Image (cartoon, rainbow, N blue to C red; front, side):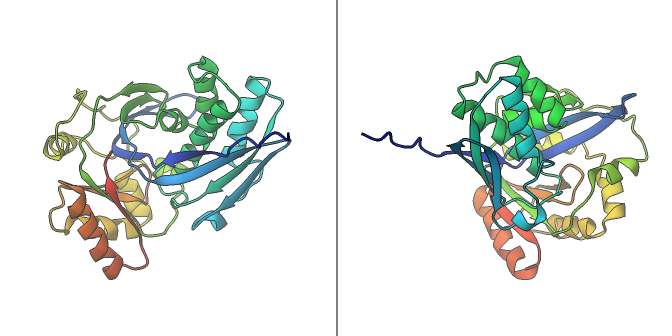
Length: 291
């Protein structure tokens, strides 16, 4: 009897949201030292993998036209690096469903690369605790190690020193992007100071949205001032979010332009999203939960 084809594997590439982001220094090699509290809400891109003789990538979805499936794509770079490091002879046909805006400060490309590493470890039977996996993730980009974990965490150094958190609350969460791309290197170049205080001592768990927001009020995103100066639509998003009913905190994520708002519960975030979809139809808007 003919052998049945192996089932398709799928992996979610969750958005990475910087609830706080402190820039604490810059190394001699140009990399910035960071201290960030990162969350991974349950929305993002989706990566599919089918066994194949060769290595290929197809991109589809709402933001597919913003990317190319060539050698510079982080998904392909992750696959090639993993195959080389572990001497894998097999290929894979990858399909990326791109739902997150590109160059938007929520780790889209890094999350996709991390999802590629996870799904290929499953397909090629690679031990995910092998230290070479973390080394590959670090070489691919500063955000890839934390996206590889894809759980609430504190990241320090260049993003490679990770401290998992026990829990974030099931708060309502709203993500908004004015559909503009912001170049991360440009934002970093516009920083007024690269030597800023780190985040204060952080609890291992937050019992509710109120406790989390109280903690976040003592933090900041050091990239928000230069990003809003370079891309004024981000200011508009933050002003609108801060004016929403029941909003507890609004802030920019990463280097922008995506901003987030925290609410006490998911229905509040959903109502805010429904309002904004009518008031600002040109914006990308997604309501979810924090975890």
